[in-house]
Image 1 (cartoon, helix red, strand yellow):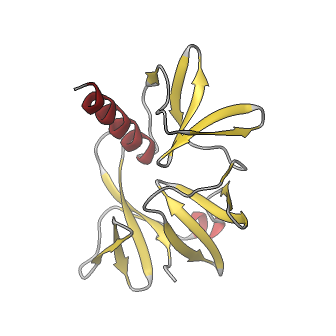
Image 2: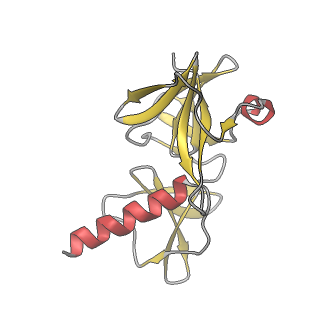
Length: 165
């Protein structure tokens, strides 16, 4: 039961992280045992399955990784995308670039997404295809791939993640 409760807490934190909206801070005593420590700007983040934990008081909170943080392993289920001729790796709302062989760096979302008026849709148009890539569901419209996002208030939208090579 303890393991099930821990899994439920981690799942809820991941969904909260993915929705890019945290209305309150969820604290945990310690990150998963399997987590790896990644130091960035003097802060020891714990990283496990695409979720980042930052020390906070006597525990840890789930946070978005800061730009510049580097990891040796991408999260399970990441997608390789190309945006504006630049290859990226995308997982859980976070973009990575390959910094060197076996090392990936968190980067700002590509500028092309910020200026593209169709970078987010409130609903999918007729004919959008469901596509599974590495076990994750995306929606393909022409050559563009979208991922479903749910906001804090429960409204759904579809965010561009790029073009799969």
